[in-house]
Length: 227
Ligand code: AP5
Image (cartoon, rainbow, N blue to C red):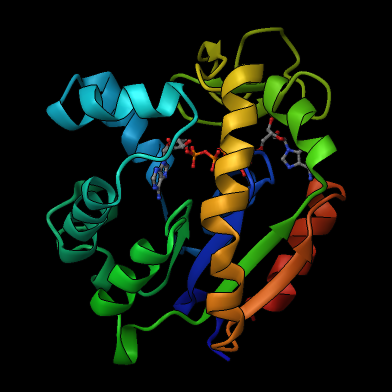
């Protein structure tokens, strides 16, 4: 098995399963590059780019952004030229975590085309959390507008309400963390993303983590899988 600094991972899981929380933590401790398609899309929305304008409607409604838009966006990051992941792109990084991509079979197939041989995936981690837990995690989530740190009003509160403990930035609630959009996102996860469990299971790279435990316990288990 690859050492964690050479791991090429996909974090799979329902909305609120803890993919982003854990990917940030693993990346900080290991030097792996963390690439979240949700974060990339929110940056596009913020910048008012053509992609951002098109994506926003899908995101606010809890639907997936069309495959080709996402695949083109990720390919640009894999191929290079993005300052967030280095001049030569994801392939130049020694190891990385894809968070929220792929989430359909066409996306997984497109990833396979771009990552083969020495660059093939080493780990796919599935975060398992019962659906009834996810709603509370999502409605209580708060995110720092400045540094992107993820908080929760009950499970991980900041010392001062609305202010990030990490950088003093302002906290915000995501526009898709409302009951209606969450319901749609869970439905979309069930119908379009869960088929990936069989896709990666058949290839022997899938590990399931019980992510309905404390973040510290989940983190420790992740490290054992990624050694
Ligand atoms: P994206 O941003 O990827 O959202 P998501 O997949 O719905 O996942 P979340 O970010 O909501 O959850 P998470 O698992 O990261 O949980 P977190 O760690 O924050 O995508 C948003 C939208 O963009 C999509 O709906 C779609 O429109 C579009 N999009 C993105 N990628 C796409 C793609 N590939 N194809 C097409 N469209 C795409 O944790 C949640 C909360 O729980 C936090 O408050 C946290 O503090 C708390 N928490 C975490 N772990 C624990 C724990 N163990 N115990 C208690 N609380 C915990």
